Image (tube, rainbow, N blue to C red; front, side, top):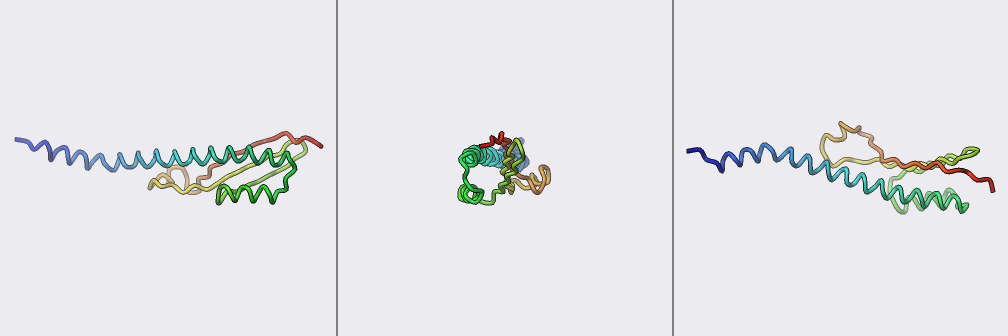
Length: 117
């Protein structure tokens, strides 16, 4: 007679690491999408602040107050303004940083027409 409970336990132990890995990947990508959504909202606010002639220091303080460790770059040209927000993300899932890169950054960019006032 074969012990079915022992067989199920062995199968579960074999599948458990794969299941945990998938759960951690889902959590990582959920956090990435949440951060990207917050940064998209923030960049819309930054565009409005820039259009209202706020200083760069005020915009930097706004960014640091809302999301820590976020890099803000504003590059005005003759016709356009390139606004870039990026933030380094540290993965929870072991090994995922090897797949996607150790310095994975969440990036959001806007190119806005620069109206001469």
